[in-house]
Length: 414
Image 1 (cartoon, rainbow, N blue to C red):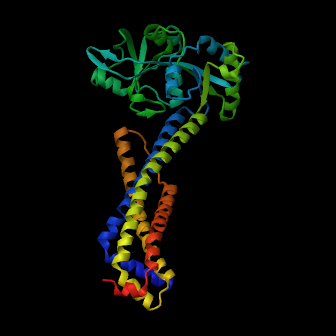
Image 2: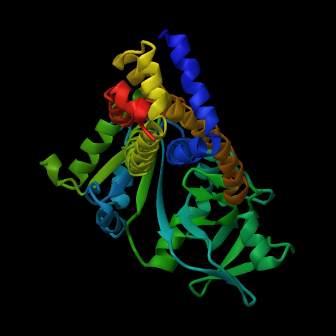
Image 3: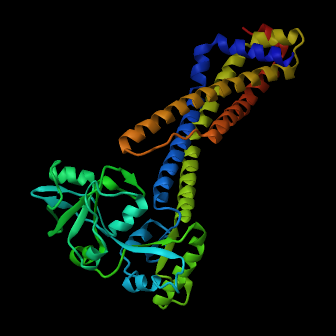
């Protein structure tokens, strides 16, 4: 029997029992669809997170207090560490210590709600530099002005708020010059940011920004920072700047052994690599879990092929009687099995791509972010390969059973 004849015979056999063929490959379709969906959404999430992290620019370097986290619990320890203080800012600002540093700003995070005349809202509150944020993210007030370095030095009670904060507290009325309360302390609104949505690690629309000195003094009662952001002269100078920062802070903290550092440094590249690794591992793990359905689907294919062999016993006997060899019979049933799973794989790929595209559109609207659809080429190739492999592996046993049948016994089978 030629390959073309075997292929044609296999197609005819599958078309003869269309409903059964469709139900047989359902497990394969679900498995491949799930893998495509998971890998596409995983890549889209990775691109979104990396895009937001990279929002500060490749020249940004973040210094955080405490030891570098090695597990989820370590992040809390880092947040409450008090190792970064003003003396570190002074030391880093010396050109002789960090020659490629062009800007530096500390930051503190405040967990609280804000209120105005009975209206309460819980935004993201940062003690930071408004000028630094505006320059880095290219965000300037739609109404009012930014607070400046003089306000920071004088610990002024001023804030710049996001568009949603204004809407929640002032119901669309003018906010400039009004006083809002944070932890019982009055802060005068001097500026309102335009609607911008998610930028880097925060949502501009839900932000309340005030001088970090004011946040330390009036709201937190601390003399340390939650992080320090440094901007290097250019991308090429980042690695050297990181070395200079580490050496300078170690000298400031009297640390001789680098393993005892009470701070850690992150660059945008480092964060991007870290996020990529985490998302890759998570996607691979979920794909492996979903792949169990492919095994179930493969068992279903084997079961149906065994039923098919039994139903077509006379056909097998007749083919052998007119000259078909054991190899011809085995190839025919093996090809049927592979065709069945490959067709299921193709259907699964189509469903997976369509659902992934739909998911990206929904994510963009629901999360109000620029979620991009990612066509998972590796997943498509893997889906086709896995489908063919499943058909081959789970089709071997039924095909061998068919090829071993005696033509005389097969012809007498009722």
